[in-house]
Figure: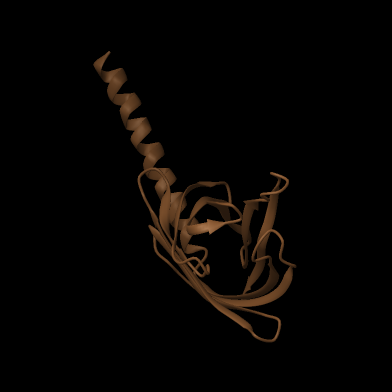
Length: 167
């Protein structure tokens, strides 16, 4: 009985170690410089704006940082950054780029994506919650998508989607 428990415990530890190693490789795959285009909707009632963005990404076995700039129309430029750390149960960090101030990020990995809840510093579209997905789309590509709830319809809407390629 004791040896069976030790075998189960060892198997569980090996699975945890392999999962962390897989996450480390996943995070490191985001390392580099990226550029691309997308859309932005600053609020539920605002028009959609086409944007172009550049990002530099730093990654370690336990962290991911994205630092970039997006431009839309002739006059709009916004610096954007996200710093994530792997924790025992998922990922947490800070997003900077919203007009409301720094936002908290918390979530987990599912396949080729980090699915993160956003907690804005102030109300956005009637509440302080949204979702950020950082998705690996290919060996040289990633997609950043923010979704929120439309306060009028209650339906999920995409407020920004940026497709990036390694540059």
